Length: 290
Image (cartoon, rainbow, N blue to C red; front, side, top):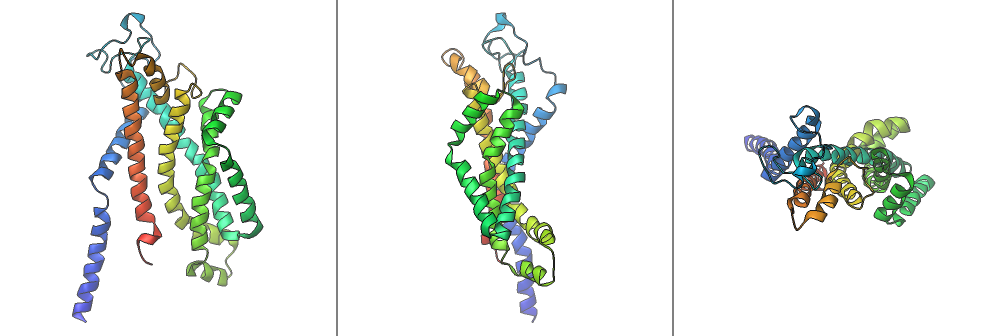
């Protein structure tokens, strides 16, 4: 009996340690970079930065100096200021667009995975129809028709993310709807709303949050691609994608104008991917036992 109790207590102690070891240095480095980007983006108005839209044609493509830490662009605007204010736009679109996807897509997937039948067929068919259109081409067409604005761009990318979130929520709901705690709640006479909100939603929310971080990374890339093509946020507002697009004209003279925002976008997207993949692995029910 003493040996059994000792082995059980060792298992209880070892399990959290093994789970903590999964959060390696790359995970915490990614968290640190994300916190830095969020901090400078939020505090941009109070930081001692020049106006990102002020132009000085006498300081065009000025090199790195104490006055301009990252130099100036082709119109004499401070590159560091534009980079930080561009982070505000990229993060705004990158965060709020997946919120639309996770809200609508998560709700549809949860309902489809629980009720099944004709409703599931209708939802899955609608999402397949939306997925039939090439996402980038659809975003380009809608942006060109509705006009360039942060609101329009966020709504377009949010709608394009609905099918992916719906599939994640539906897959989780299909598995959980057959579990013992759901069957027990049904046997006790619980309503559908109570089962969905109290039993299924807390369990479906975990993989959705992990996928949300991956969606943020993808959205930042798509926003950057649209801004690079000139269909993102309207000038003089800057985002990382528009800065890369403007910097390509100066690749031979000042390649840093394209590389600096590209590196910032790369590190941010990589950080969101690393954190999202780690959380997805930790919340995957196949990684453990019940």
